[in-house]
Length: 315
Image 1 (cartoon, rainbow, N blue to C red):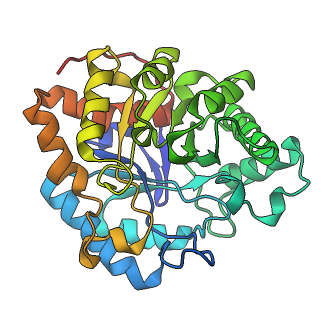
Image 2: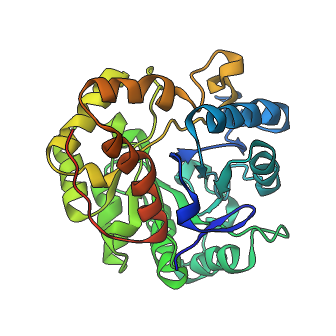
């Protein structure tokens, strides 16, 4: 039986009875000189916990896939505290983000060495915590094609996935470069259904989305509510185009809360924007309960476990 590694231990997919947020952050630090606000740390833990607990109570939120990886300020102890307090299961991640955030350990390291680093996280736990990642992500690139360091980190992600049985979630910066990411990962031997290509709602190109889904990869519309990048109206159009082309079973949704200003307590749309705003619009466009369950629960569970039973559903 497939299980999902969470920060509090293995979880049977059958116990995930409510929706899943497929790409979020609970604790991270992406601050640089040009951006001092991209942080979620101990000052924000109570707000994060309260938001997730309220979503569990109101919408049945069952699982959050937390994609903060190496070099992004990962804090698995904080994830465990939030998970226990909110009673929402949390999946931790490993991997490397896109090149500007690569830690020094990437410099000069070969693919085999990088692979071993990820496998060590996955098989023995992150640091001294004993907490094992349940996904490799968000492994990143920027531009149409990965840079040389990004090729190494992406290839290492694929090799680690093959050795450990985990799936790979990507960061395609501003939605660009997904086809090249998928091509590199599959060339390394990873099956397309073990790949989720990130931030595709930032790319207004339904043909690219169809091609990724047709190949078997998951297409992540995972910045819902970030209207300074794209409007949710555009996101809804892109989602409906995927559904109408027969690819509802290859869609993942999330909000990608990646700075404290996105929390509802600080005036942001928060983790619940998907449930409170976007899904009602999807229902109004004709989606029934089964389709909503497919996209928000069954799809992310199939991605995480590698179960490739294709499902079709129409709005």
